[in-house]
Length: 191
Ligand code: IMP
Ligand code: MG
Image: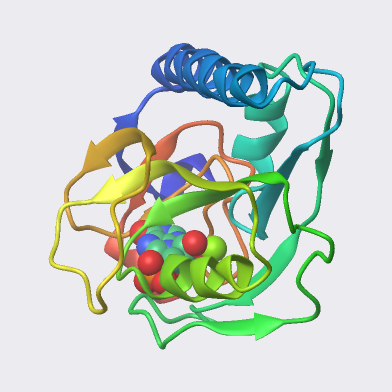
């Protein structure tokens, strides 16, 4: 796996520091939201919605920075079927978490790329009328979005418009377990 790495864009250490910062900011914002409503932070009104499969590593680290009582409801979206590196449009696979009405929802995704995934998931969740909706992504690619989509509220790192893997992101299902964000050597994409 290490042989396939071209360049490290974000180190393990930098990810760890930034995820803790994002977690602290998100926790503070959610706690303020709950306080404004007169709810204690153990009221169980917060729901994290990680988008599978790319967000699994990020959300596992992020949610442990959030001290309030919360639940997790995953949504599965596929946008890069197989060995493609260009978005083919977002499609939902399976059910959206139910009962988001009146809850404080945080969508968590690995990367804001064309914007198609987040624009679809936002729309579907807004239809359930949550009390608030936030979007938290680890990475944002520097490129024009293919569809109109609001910017995420929390962004870990801005990166150039290149294909990356690691810390949950895959190529053809592989490299999700690589602990840093890296680009792949050309050869790794062809064998
Ligand atoms: P979007 O719908 O084009 O914004 O794409 C979002 C999804 O595509 C992300 O959640 C990722 O799963 C996947 N994706 C986008 N860019 C990359 C990349 O550079 N590497 C791996 N997966 C990516
Ligand atoms: Mg994804």
